[in-house]
Length: 481
Image (cartoon, rainbow, N blue to C red):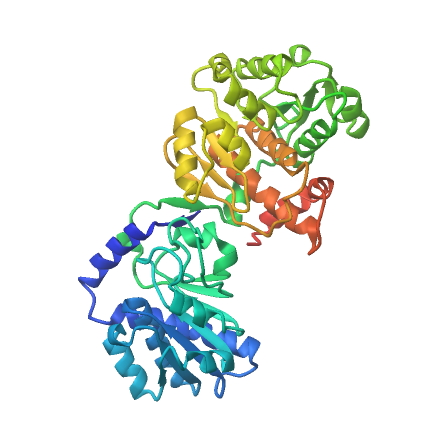
């Protein structure tokens, strides 16, 4: 798993490392990494490195110093570099002196637009991880002139580093180079960061336990259950699905099919859409009622079951079976309106809740807000459950405080029925015996991969996402990022 640290922890680690490192060494190491990536971007976009033009947007302090030193290294490679100083009296003195010695051009904010518009690449060194809030008006006005690709130093300026929130003008980077550790912004707002490169500055020994985790392909491949020579349909896990209605059978078909396509040795469907499910997926063992279903190793409950008394009875029955339950859609609304339904849950039985923002508000009384990680942590503790908050970036919280952040692969999953597919994936992994927190994270990863593969650059339906699940699993197992 890839560790992610809050800015508070990163700054503390940097202070410990700076205390035993020669002055300026860490900054030059970080800046060299920026210069290397800048040269790669120039070669790709401008077709050359020597003779190309780079403009630095330089703020106060160390972040501006990183940009100035990066500009110094680029000057040594024959790049024409201009530095627009937003606050000249607070520019990093050593970095500015080195930049001037290397022949870099220094410009004021008033002169900035002409140099920004001529640039083949703009390096954003306006603010660093200590900053809060959006860009100030002077910086925002300069950013409006940017037409070239943007390389951000540590993070795009104006984006909140610990939540990824944007509440005003902010930089949108094509690439971000960060130092020592990934920060929450890099996974919570990937659209603003672009591709992220981590430069090792020797910080790893000082960081401690990460605040967030992100699954890599190797984690997904290692966790995904595969049949062995001694397995049969029962030992691989029997997933139960209680979803849909006779009038609206789609949720039942999608959730059941996702369980079939993913990993379950057997899928049992229980509900009024039994005939429709059976007609689409003859391998599903279907019955008309959850009360008549055979034994399962997990239940997916909620999509399309309704929020009336019948739906409550179905959810309560599933919660009382002593097996992990994935509660989605209508089941979440039932819990929000009738929290006493959770009394049917056997103590210690895993529960996975999979709300989108609106369902999260019904469940907790408030929208997730800007700090989605904190909101998920609080909800996971409150309900003693795994909480998977759906969205562009999916967040999976554990009652103990651990959080997985799923990598976003576009917005292709913003389509009706996509959540039903995800709940089927979660249920199948729960039935296999996988740890519920990991099961939710792995399901979210494969769901995201399936959406990207199915879309191929154009909008896709939930049925298309469903069809791409096997290819998504193969992709993860081939260790593709």
